[in-house]
Length: 195
Image 1 (cartoon, rainbow, N blue to C red):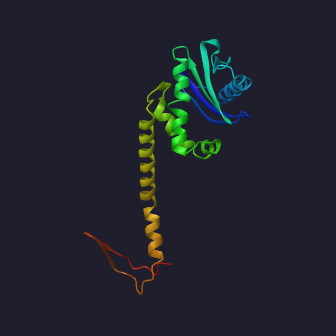
Image 2 (image 1 turned 45 degrees about the vertical axis):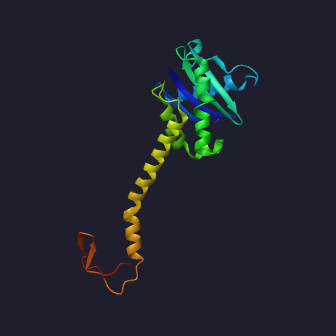
């Protein structure tokens, strides 16, 4: 089972943290710092697996990570997870590649300014510490559907404000008394003016 997914930059600043076990905020911050120190001091040419830190569970848990440019992608997992399977999930087929497709060459700023979208992508892959989906095309399809729904809801939510604004900006010679839209007829009350 996946215990936590962490992304931080070369200076240890967290860019994403998702814990699948409850920790208080101070403990989460300590885990992030400890994980950064364990991962960042390793040489580039060593393997990408190491024992978890004391706060995340010690030798019962593993840290599986990849370092891309300025970002570390770290999955904290228990012994039931395959190290190569998780490394594959991070690098080859799913997480980083999906981020690249969604953001067109993902960078640290994408993670900062689109944290909600990154969490949506992650939620399509992993839920409750269990891997749900590893097909990148399916994840992208679901994320695109979510984006379309958000855009359509924003259009509906903004409609009343746009309608009021449009009426206020109309230059009408006199106040209309009835407004007919299809089968709907609206009687306008006596108002002093639109402006």
